Image 1 (cartoon, rainbow, N blue to C red):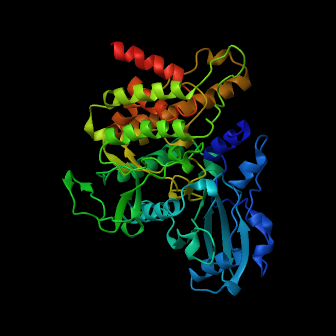
Image 2: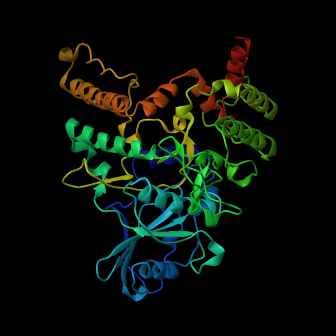
Image 3: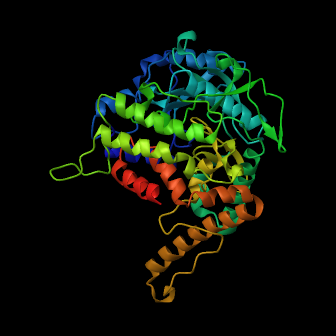
Length: 468
């Protein structure tokens, strides 16, 4: 069970400082024996108010740093003696990330997953294959993987790891606040271009992407291009999902259908069956961070949760959209926020790299179709394609309120520009975004977390729908 603070920190990861190539990394002098520095292996970014021992444990990983240094140097044709410095980036919620600087100035990034990052082997194997596919098939600026291992027991590092190129440029978060609306919109158009590229190769199954060699009994995956089925892609294959919703809140430890799936209804039904399996088999139900517990308040139970999920399974096929184009499976970046996008420092509308492809999934387009996280703001949601109305009574506001209202208006305008540009240049994606505004999508979305909360309201809404 996670504390409110840990939940906040997880959400903050999306918005402020996940593992990446930050200029404000924690500097550590290089030692001949790097294994003497305990900070490499433990979580050092903060504390937890509740259940701290467990929270720290799932974010700590022991491995042979000396061997990781060797692998990093080997990846660029050097020896570990030629590694001049090692730096640890600020801890993310799921990984340890390091910067290795060689004597000739060459830099590479190493990434080691925490125990809570995902299932052994699958998490790293899928991330590497996804980065390869995005870089070479979808023409997205993704770091080149130089060395990796998804089998901790088969390498001298003693952990799964990825060694990759260091992305050029600076994080978008460093320059976004000073960019003008025109420059921001140019960046938005660039991201829209990548989203359109991601839609250029649909898949025929749902799950996560792997190399065929990393899955048992795999014969590759079928793709579609230009409306025609392509010969099976032997190098890549669709396998079990590595998405966070199949891992978080204790789900990682249980056995259930993780895919791949051959159709949308099969995939969405598996979501409900997953939640039922978790409700039935967890020793203790995870505690909701949103509910009130006390005398006279609602009492959750396994039977109530299962009743809600059974209602979902009866109705799931009716919640699906009628437009087949927005149900097609695509590969998508799961976390497009300003820390994961690297831009040219002098031309910030120019994207040089997109990092953190861990937990990427091949999902229906309507599951992917939200505006990039860096466009999010605290205010009325942007819908349709019309620009937002200018604040009423703006001239009567004091200077501080004017600045606040103008800032919100500009953020809403940029969000509206994204929607209008998507409508004009990628109508299928826009239609998927529109479906996300419907009750049907809301019912699909809420069912994904009934293990935690919402079963009473969900059951009531299902009963109302079944009466119609």
